[in-house]
Length: 304
Ligand SMILES: [Fe+2]
Image (cartoon, rainbow, N blue to C red; front, side, top):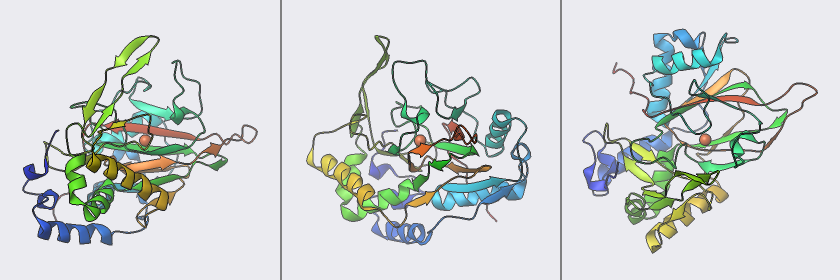
């Protein structure tokens, strides 16, 4: 996981800081993908067609995410979303602290049986992050999907940014910042205790790393200052400040989208955030989003 820039895989030469030519070509292709992609229509997620699978994988190859829309209600959301992931080659569900048994998590306003208030289960806004940024070692969340069973009465929009665009913005500003963010100790995740018991020790890790499996770029990030302790050196501090500033300033590749009932996104763990929202108990408009997380990245589509 602790990959430095000169250990790039042959299929990803653009991640080498010494290969400006490959980087320029890759960068141009990446930046050419703009705007929200069209949703891929899916009749039955449990029996994904080869064509829908290809469309989803092509979307994820280009932008690290795809939008999908299900043709009708699904009989068993958790079972069918698990099958959907399996059809796409995603097998390992991340069992996080609050995941229900199936590994599919219902994200809705609810009280949790822990000491902490987990913001995802409130109606408050969620800042920019990648999922599982606090996970150590092998347990990196490389893909996730969200499926909207019901939107809120008001708000709850998501913003999405392909983490490879964030990489480009940083590298264009200062390639040394990429090197700093790939350091094994770029940031530290403070320990997490619950009921006086430590359930996660302090651990350090890189922000950007290259997958030992396929050389793809992985990002761990949280904009919340209390969630991560950045390494105290100039390059790391400046890179972290630049990212925060970019999110404040905005970027023309940040996409804002409000998932409607039946819609979802599947991603290679891109950067994202959520607006606060308001449920309306009288009309029954209570936001309900299902989430699955995977330790695997989406596979590449078949060559045609
Ligand atoms: Fe998230």
